[in-house]
Length: 102
Image 1 (cartoon, rainbow, N blue to C red):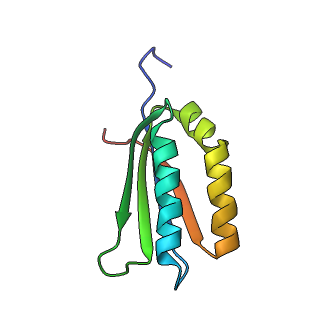
Image 2: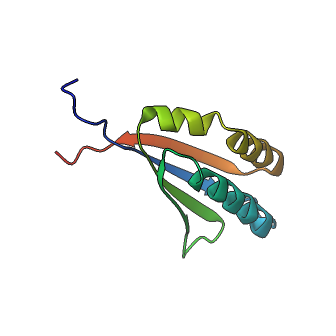
Image 3: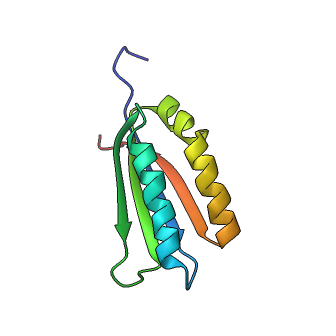
């Protein structure tokens, strides 16, 4: 490494809320978002809801570095959300990205 600061890590998560339980699922997403925004490495955490498919939510996250992402992934609030998501039938996809603007 050349001494430059590490580039932030972007994470996109797509969540399909369980049919008939969208409000409860969205509340769980909002609890996750509030706890995540309080993390030291969180630079941005936005919850977006699809206009055409209201049961679909996208979370757009920006983390200071890979260590911040790992801290987030292993946090109690993420574990609680994953447990709720599994029990309620939510479908969750997530991918991390490095900034590659050039």
